[in-house]
Length: 260
Image (cartoon, rainbow, N blue to C red; front, side, top):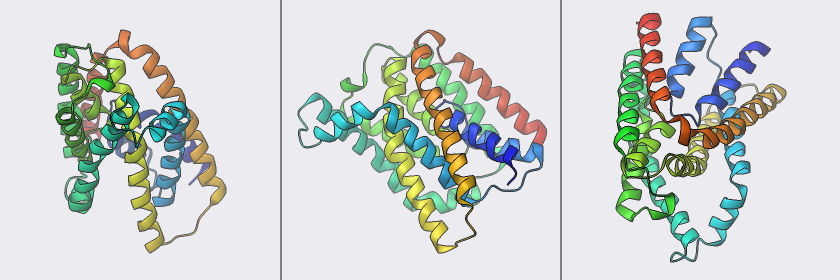
């Protein structure tokens, strides 16, 4: 990979990991338009390490509190900690059962365009008609499980893990900030699980490793993701989700025009 490709794809991963847009839509479109080869599994692992570090650093105090409260399930932080665990289970099970099939059968421009646009509209509807009055600590267990099931849908390319979990949170009455915060906290085990699976695949089929390139990619993705998280949480209550829904529809149209 040349330096420009490393920089662009690392910044792109940092941007789209936490915004409610389609990461797979961007990552299939940009290399195709620029004629770049596949970046390789090692690069994917590196940028996931960077984005995981970003969300971990941003929520470091909350994560410490949640870890301490894990064995106090009746406490406010304890309930949230277990909510994150429960909401992660459907994603892990779906990944183990259907991950290979989804990767083979559904990773096409047509599927990505359809899910990018379709779930963009659903995101706007949830934002428009949700009650927007509760925080992440108010979720009941059924609601937590519903968010977890929605997160499992993110295995389908174009859905967007952050987008679908924010959508379900908004539909269940969470405020925009609360829906985003819960989605970002869910990203910690989700990215860790995905990264662990990628490491297993990488070890089973090793290839030459350029540690310097991977370190730079991880750093760029991490810094970008940290800035995205901080900016998104500061602006989303005023900004709303319409701009992201419109962008998703636009991105889907570009994918259809460019790749189909």
